[in-house]
Image 1: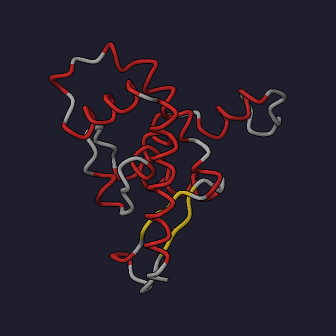
Image 2 (image 1 turned 180 degrees about the vertical axis):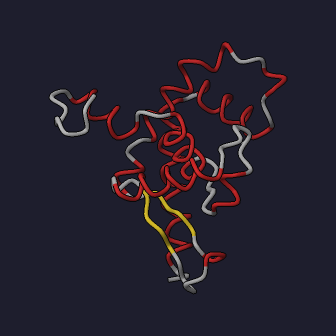
Length: 146
């Protein structure tokens, strides 16, 4: 799809914004795992390369899905937070999770992933509400650093 031609469909628009796995995995890490630092994203099981991570963080910021919090102005203090637009991706992340979780061997899942699987399986809507509320509280706590 040419970036010069605007999408004429809501799904095409969404894919244009979120259409690669790294963007969704970074948003997953930010919202569900409360990762905020470059180093934390690098430590994810998917092993994203440094240049791709830098590019995706920049792209997510340009698209208004995340913002940078840099309380002391140094690279070490930089944190990335989901914006309200970024938080809107949570239902998409959950639905993608539901779509494939049963086909993944549980022996490769860590404790956090097993907990998420259990919570989503028990009550998907409650998991979404709870995750969103926890993330908003987390953001509020971090915003005190500004």
